[in-house]
Image (cartoon, rainbow, N blue to C red; front, side, top):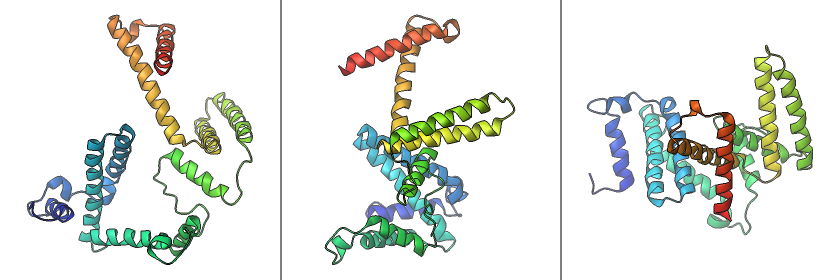
Amino acid sequence: MTDVAPVERLLYIMERLRDKNGGCPWDIRQTSESIAGYTVEEAYEVYDAVERRDDDALKEELGDLLLHVVFHARIAEESGKFDFADVARTVADKMIRRHPHVFGTAENVPNWEALKRSEREQKHQTGILDGIAKSLPAATRAYKLQNRAARVGFDWDSPSLVLDKIEEEMGELKNEIAQSSHADQREDEMGDLLFACVNLARKLGIDPEKALKRTNAKFERRFGYIEKTLNERQKNFEETTLDEMEALWVEAKKLERNQRS
């Protein structure tokens, strides 16, 4: 079936995979709930390919993500809810509705937030914070919650005030750490501290997910240097003191600075 349009071919493949008579047992037993986590993973793999500027990987990962769109749509179609055409039609209608200056007679770019607010109201999402997906990564969702609240004036005036809040939250966390039986309270205060750190990032115009992603990569590089150096010296971690590892960590930092200069 290579002589048909690529999207039609993909839809046919998914239909065959889900066919209870001769399809793939794994695909047949999946539900939208069971594959939702994989869908998120595919979206992150697209993100990773973009970050690496790997066009071949991006093409492949976009295909994997499209497969998940088709998968979810096929599951919904089987239960009579909607199909892939409905998905495509819905997003096309939304794009036209949100761009009256391109597809209509409006002369100016519309107020995006007013348009989105109107759409949320039509879905009976009337609260200021309604419509922010609960399944987003926690830091991203915190950022969006804070942004939405800031639009109605619920915001710190300056980054310095957020720094004060961070110090306050650190003090409260220290108090809970001192109470060995306060596990729930420690988690609560840790969350408050992280939320305040996200708020500081937002006030500084920094995406907290990107910032943490960079730090994760930095940690991997420097820890990798420690591991590589120990292997070269034929030493294992059990034979290495923390001070020795810290010295190698500092070496890795110096090497990175020299490479940048």
